[in-house]
Length: 468
Picture 1: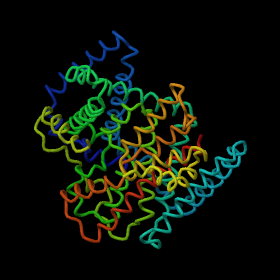
Picture 2: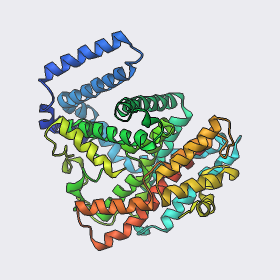
Picture 3: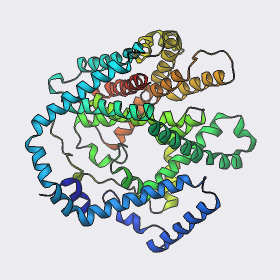
Picture 4: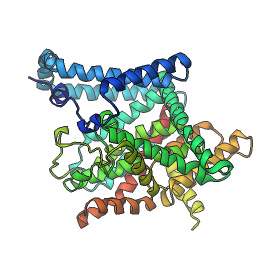
């Protein structure tokens, strides 16, 4: 009996990577490896502290390659060793499942009792999670078709990630370090921008934020061209890369794709937010936490009622694009980034105040946070983050403070971290229409995807606030 976990890579060792892209790397593999080793040793000798990021990435690459080789050459042996365990697990899956559920429920109740005994106000955030799930179920398109297992798994994964990032020192340090590396990487843009724009870069926002978007988009395009991103993430939710499959997707799958896009932010615009002074580690952890919750809420509000054609990775092959070389890929990425580039504040502050309060924001600060949520939903997240950056600057400089605590700033960062706004809805519909013409009844799910994306961000805040 062969375990599919090991056999997939054995059947296709370059799973997710286009071999033609690997062949297009400069020089022969041995020459490239020799050059990289020389560069690695030189960097470590000259300044090991600055080379820590390179060391970590190199160790991850070596570990991943060793993992691939292990599955390729020893996959059958390992599968045979674990075959009896797998058969036993499948034969007793029914009662094992209920034991696991019972243990999880007991653990959650015990955790709530012990953890909130000193700060019972944390239960407001937990009640917020329950309320948002209930509201999502009430407005579900097919309530009788809801599969609760992916819903609870998504919410559980988000909760566990939040505890790891916020409550454990290794998780906090890891994401803080990752955020610092992203900031260092994006700071390289300033050198190029200063060379082009000179002193104007210090005074004009567009000369600070937009080059970061172009730079990051170009780098990501090159990584996709080389096949590194496909190898790293195997699959992607980007509509451009899943274009061949859109016409065969069910409405629930299209809804999940759009919800995931709305609940998270693109890496290219993340750089622009970081340039505002928004904490990079909070942005990264917010996107990571929002991803499983977005899928859970999507499957709750628009559950699957059709037969999917994509039930395994064998039917999916991620494209590397049509670029012929690295320079063309970089210029293509820069070109693609161009598309990224009524006073409702008072109304939003009252309209969304209950949402902000149920997230766990203190009552006196909930109106300000609600105003930024409304700005993000009806206008865009750039304006909302710009307002948050202004409030953060006032706190750091000792000026009048509307939001007094760092805790509220971080939670507000989580709430605004997403693409879900009504102006983006037109962009998404137009972009998808260029890729394929959806059925008319499919358009009804577009408006709910904006709600789902916002819902996922809000539940991320509830998880984070409870964990804090």
